[in-house]
Every structure is written in C-alpha cells, then in structure tokens.
Image (cartoon, rainbow, N blue to C red; front, side, top):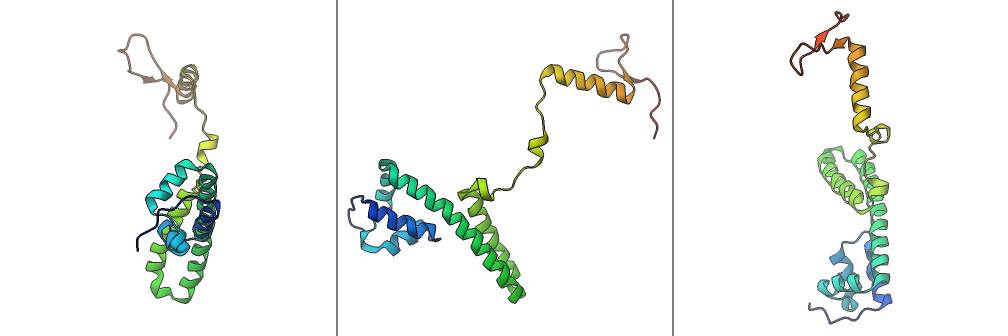
Length: 158
C-alpha cells in the first residue's frame, strides 16, 4: 500500500505516539494509524520540523520503555508455567531489557555504584598517595640507585 503525501497535524502525531507508547514499533504504529499515516521519510521530516511532535515522540519512547519492562515481568511469570521455553524467554527478555535501557537509560540502565565513590586525583594528590603507600609498605628510594629502582626498608610480614 502506498502512503499518501501527508501533512502534519497534531492529531495524526498523537495517534502515532499513542501507538508507540503502547509498545508498537514505529512501522507497526504507522500501520495501525492507517491511511492517515505518513510515509516513514515524511515522519522523519516531521520530527525535524515540528517541536511538539518531537517532544511527544520522545515521551512516547520513554513510555514504551515502561511497557517493555512490564512485558519482561509478564514473561517472567510465563516461564514459571512453561520452563521448557526458558531459553526463548531469556532471549526475548534480553531484547526487551536492552530496548528499555536504550529508550530510558535514566530509569532502566544498570547503575554504576562504584563511580560515585571514585575520586579523581590531581597530580599532586597522586604523588602524595604514592608517598603514603611507599611509607606504608616500607619502600624507600635511595639516591644512589638508578631511577625507578626501589628497596624495602624492612621485610614485610606475610
């Protein structure tokens, strides 16, 4: 079926975004909207030309991530009923998880808990930390040895 040369209206934009928010792919959303839907190339142009449509589209994609999270929960319940299909369910869940992480990373991407506790040190702080560790480990740098050679002040307890 050939798509018509559609002109943007907020009504058509809302219809497309509603389908996407409910979990449809972009092409499925255009099919569900039917004869009012633009060709995919026209839709890309609408996203560039109409800020209200772009905002609605972005919001629909965020909501779609919530639908995908709900779908993962539904799949987890189904796998209990049919354990023989666990591998297929795992693949489906992995795809949905990846999609949710990409669509709404603030909500669904894995959180890096270590990054909050890491402190970036400047050059002087690094030197001070090296000196502290050398003292703690009993390492001394004698002046008569070549650069980069270290000796132990005292044997370390094992």
